[in-house]
Image 1 (tube, rainbow, N blue to C red):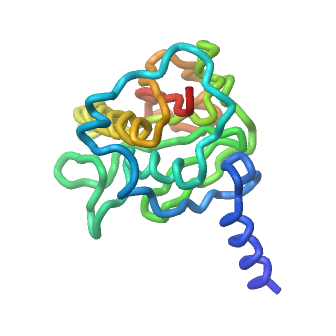
Image 2: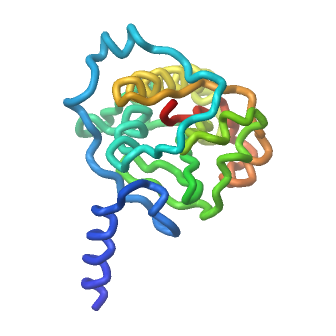
Image 3: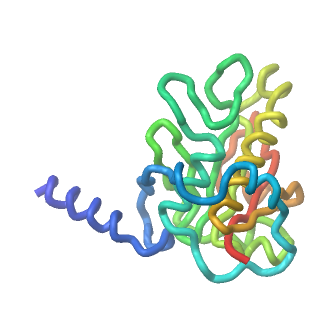
Length: 208
């Protein structure tokens, strides 16, 4: 009986029309898109920030979301092979959180999944700028604890991660914006971020 429920769950997951249907579940991501879309040079040429205006109501597909988080800090080869560089070949010292209508999640690149932290829709609470709350997804970048490595290299890592999100979003026909003005305490409490960690930036991602 347990196996039947598992099979039904994965069938349901595979037929989800959009990410907001993943209510009260961890989200098992699909393989990222690595072949279609614009070229890297075209994406760089067209890179720009989202306008400070409302996003459309269109949500990214599971494939698009998978591609975006993978671009930010996913595995692209065996061993310690990441889509962005981390100093001295270390594991990521930045955590990627994702806010969706269905809740708040922590990205696990090793398992290629989003782990559910809260089933509350907190998109409108992430920042005071109204346009940010209209995005169907908001990425939150926070350090994993503290220490010399984190304190010295965190901003460089987040710079690489956020630029990758810009390029991936552009290649998918989406828009994003690097934001450093946000409701810090709200996000800390929502995501249960420890006192030794700190949030560096957020990025609303969607269609405009």
